[in-house]
Length: 208
Image (tube, rainbow, N blue to C red):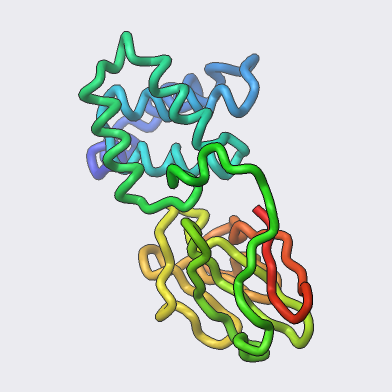
């Protein structure tokens, strides 16, 4: 939220409260995914970068796919125009979200090798690259957990340096995660995106 918006909330709480109530109740009869896609489009229309990042991340978290988001932007071409769509796509690409990779858009789900189990130290996390994806692998004996490296808050790509024992802390806003469960234990309230994982002939594999 901008400093100007915070100021107006303090200076005119009754008026601004009514405004936010209106926004909350608008679209009551729309399904959540449609509301999220419209929210993304509105942030592109006014070219608010932080707002776009916020609502894009929320849309992905609530089940919108990258293909649906791209389609929504293109369907809004008559009002957005090409320049604003290009502006939005530039921001999305700079966010380095794994699911927006060209290879990911129409890929069929399958098992992917991440490496031999022996390459992963017990009770430690390792950042690995697998095709277009960056992942964290956390080993617990003969069990593994596999997570996307994008923070669920604003899709920040979390570096390996963020690992500390069984915890992972996003450097941007200090959301802290427990790698045994994927749950956020400080600052935020959304878990890391996880992938189904298995051991196959001594190799760690993940499904996406």
